[in-house]
Length: 527
Image (cartoon, rainbow, N blue to C red; front, top):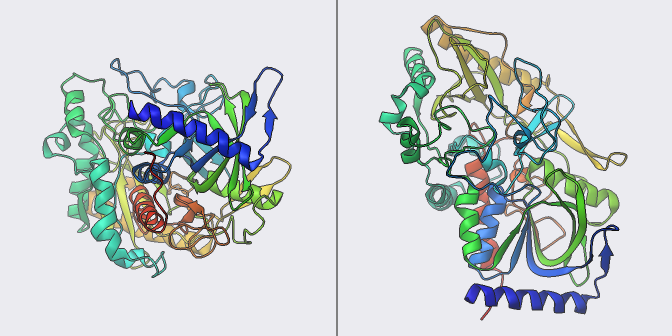
């Protein structure tokens, strides 16, 4: 009852505020109704790791918040058919694409155009993957919750960020909410994790450090998969298009559900933000298209807010800022927007083994090999499951290092979107490739294995940068020149999270930024 009363008061206040600001109405199409601009205290654009953290902390502070998410909500069903599978993909697999977007040893597969969970930004020299839906990229990531070391962290980040506080407060806070933990031994010993066990053994023979890492899975549900009580998802390698068993602790199932439970946060799926800019009296205007499940625009909507949090991911947030700079809706943005972008030095490699490897089963990254003392450059390796059609004997491996942020995005006025550029053959890229070859040579010599071709650097699942710390925003994500405009996602990270998967670092930085923001912001609780 109290939440309903709060919502009623919220709507009344929104209408009154809109009238007081003199905001205009918009007629979106011949078939849509006239929309009155809404006023709300805070808007969060995007619902991935950074946006989910911001939403929860705003809700807990009693700040009325709307979360605008371009994708749909994906509820896990008892029948285990929420998401597409990699062996039988359909429109749920890709964001408004007529074909699948994952790389494969077979041609891309035709699918129906739909608002699916995986999107790709095809750039010059790189393809960058990102999620779409309530939960953002947490819907399609592998659950890997990896903390970088302090030494490597400061090879990327400025000293204005206190690693000790991250280590003592914010990394643990994120892990506790995501319920991340290492894979239990009984599950690691199952057939689904044969590839991970093989890589552990090979690392030991090569004298490399290998260990389990925290993963945001409900391992009891994984046990139910093994027992046949839940649809095989994690154990069957189904993570890229979502996990039907519900074993993945994506942020829609923790941070975002907790945010909504405060009664102050409303999530609006199928709202594609097109414009951000200044309004009057220090406020911000956000314009978006409400779409249907085939991507057709149903209405245009406009919002005015006091606090604006950009969390649409490295590609999405950077594109919004570049558009705002080009259209002069945010006139004080500097010329650093779009620069210092990187790939986390992602690489994929296929190792050839003599026996069975079960390459399409199990979840990615439950163990890691650290070669941080590599004489050329530090790096880590993680097993990941292949998509169908990869034969036995192959062991797919993901490599991550520290990539310089040599990439950039520019605004294309003709397409009204951002173009992405990555120098795949830069000196830094060549150095990381040599370091990777050094590590694989150690593994191959110790184990009698070989590589099925050179490591592939043509795609990344970890796009980072474009609105980076110290260039576009301060250490807490506040955009220079705009006191109540914040960057909360991977776009503020200069190209790498220092030999670690980025999700934990993104969320921890967002936790730190939100705590600072709220400590300097009056609480506005509805009575």
